[in-house]
Length: 500
Image 1 (cartoon, rainbow, N blue to C red):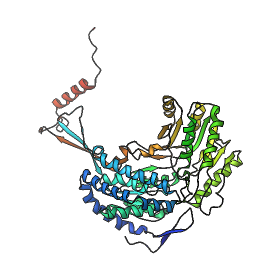
Image 2: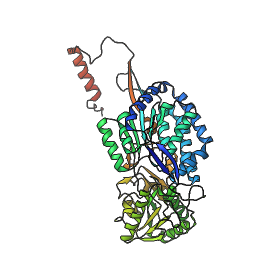
Image 3: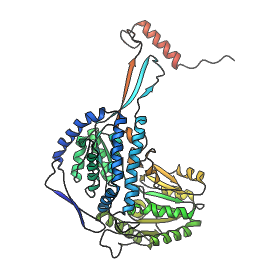
Image 4: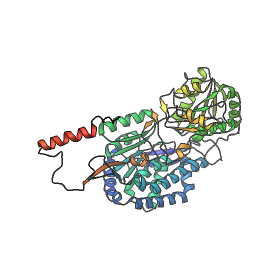
């Protein structure tokens, strides 16, 4: 690739220091890059799935060997702790490659369909790669999502061009370098660096789009893909509720809440963003949250911290605005509530908000930051009603010692994934569908659809008898017409009454 003269300056959000300068790719360069990808895909797509899977396992081995290097790059450009980069970014990719490599052949196997009529026809349904897939990935999990969304597309036989966020391009660039180092065809997995105009231009050159990001950008992508008749899969925002029932194990619920709300400084689509607690256990649950928040360590990537920094100044400003809006409308800050003192980077204190309600932005709009707004409810029915009072529907969680009761509650929540006595964990299961309802997205990553969406479905029909003519073919003789009418009455007419 011949980069344009302009470049991006990438800084560490936890320290403000320069991490790298990365050359940009101009939109005018995409036709040539896409052309090379399509040419290489012709050969890649002809390989059998077992061969492609074996090559991806080589890539996996190199990722595992270079895990420390990858985690360092991820942490430097996101501000997340090194341990978190290992536990989420790397684990998700390694497990994802393993799953797809071992299951793609089964999920994309040609299926024999047995028609009810026309038994003399052999009918097959097969999956074929779309060709060139565009992956537009976000900044919050720059390695896990960029690579994780590309892997099933690659094993399915596609070429992939990844356009990562301009805030965190280094992780995807390192993935492309490791791909080449593993001896895999470079044109099959390419990374292009640019701003929003490059992402918009990419839509014009691909056969399918996988986008993860905001609702506003997802809507624009869906509109353009609709005009182009290019399929798209969108994983958008979330405002995930947690319901804590009166009979919950409060220690487990509190531990899950703190982790689920503060993972990646709250910058995760599946973050716990609002908590509804039944009145009898509200005070005790809040006490436990306060206690746990006091023990958390916040710091930069190499400081052994639990919670890192936010990744962008605009995100820091949004979190601060949500907290200020809540305070102006009557909420109470019990812990945190401001930028972390003594820190030059984009740190915001883990914040516990009480006396909240749905008039506040922190309970309606995606915060994407280290806040835990907790609301007291009278009963489970009120909690379910409030959990569903949202334009988002990505994830949710329910805590109760009666798991059957938990399942009954979960089934009433309008979200793509609901955990009982757990949270966020659905992201770690590549064999289970993951996606959203309502404005949280279209389509699923993971599960069967997670790889089949990168394919076209083709039906093949073979005649096995070789008759000179078929009943529906010309000419339409009176004999054929009478035969067809009789067949329709026999097959679809009213059933004859049985003798008494």
